[in-house]
Length: 174
Figure 1: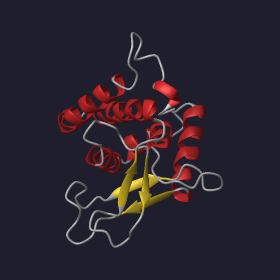
Figure 2: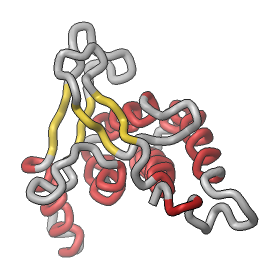
Figure 3: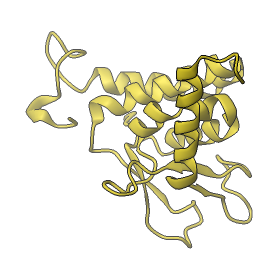
Figure 4: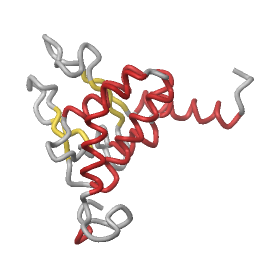
């Protein structure tokens, strides 16, 4: 629409066009995976030419604004995947690794050890974004415990007097 600023129109076209080239949609088997329902898991590839890894949470965070605006159910299912595969200690998976197409659990296994200090922040930001885009308080209710767990994990990554603003010991999780 011509009422939108040029920068916004260009940004939407660029983001949405990348979905056609750099994404995959895995629909659960029969019966569908319980946490995903019939919606499956939508993942964007970080870079087709350089880093062909599906579903990195920073990529979802940086490039997911149009997803939350135009396809909120896909965005919500992606959040359900991150919450479902969150480790017991609250670590959010950094990416999805497809290992076994015949798996009854959509063949997704989270990768937790990369960018630990960023993953939880991205997860919380994605939940907030979806809630703001939809105005649906059900988003907050559904993801409250996962957000809380993620924040607790992130806050405990680095001991000492400045845990929030310092990296984990030895640079782990960078």
